[in-house]
Amino acid sequence: MFVQEKRPFYHFDAHADETWRILFERQFAKVQQRACAWYLQGHEILGLTSQYIPNFEPLDVLFQERISWELVSTDVQYSDGQTWFEHLRERQFLITEYIRERETLDYTPLPDIFHDAFGHLPMHIHQRYADLTQEYAHLMLECTQEARPALGSIWWYTIEFGFIKERGELKAFGTGLMSSYAEWDLAFSDKMERRPFDPADIGNYKPSPHEMHKVLWVLEDFDQLEQFVAQQRQKYR
Ligand SMILES: [Fe+2]
Image 1 (tube, rainbow, N blue to C red):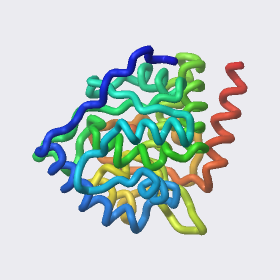
Image 2 (tube, protein in one colour):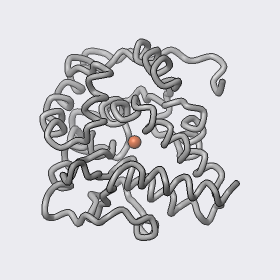
Image 3 (cartoon, protein in one colour):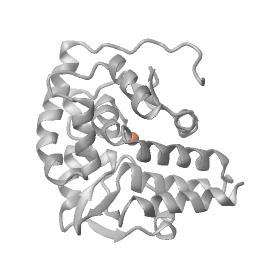
Image 4 (cartoon, protein in one colour):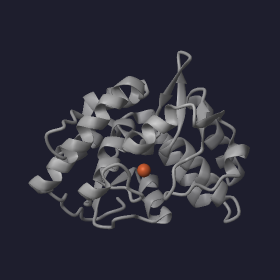
């Protein structure tokens, strides 16, 4: 096991719960319309509620029993890529102890508890999706230094900000989209350029967490991303 002794999960105060409630209620109305099926199913499986920030002890048990992953608490506000991927490789999802301030409800460049729990966890409770992130983590940790920036961009524009087609309809699956009130409407609007998933194309873009996106990419299905990761991993075996 990667972490010998797990640190206890942080329990948020009433002020943080109220921030969570505001974020949850306004964003859930949006995602219900246009999030992918896995995401919405994941919400139900986890039993997320607007009333309070989830209790991560039972959620950790659920993750362990259902998909053999675990949730791990961290007091680091923004884990660097290396740390993040090392944990994913060990089937551990890091849970931060930080929630955005009321002045920055619309957009936060730092991933907070709303991003982690509302954005990531409903996707991550699906075995196939979680395994895909583990495969991607192996790839990120095994690839050459030269290949890393492009692979990081592809992670960003799929796992964090990806769209997917479902029965011909455009749906969001990226967790950064799920947790960003400011960017959600823009992402679905005519102002956003949306392109078919193309790793070579995405690899030329360097994402910035400090500005809104101008172009995003659309997967045909999850097979497309799984196949890409599998092909890439072959290179480094
Ligand atoms: Fe994220």
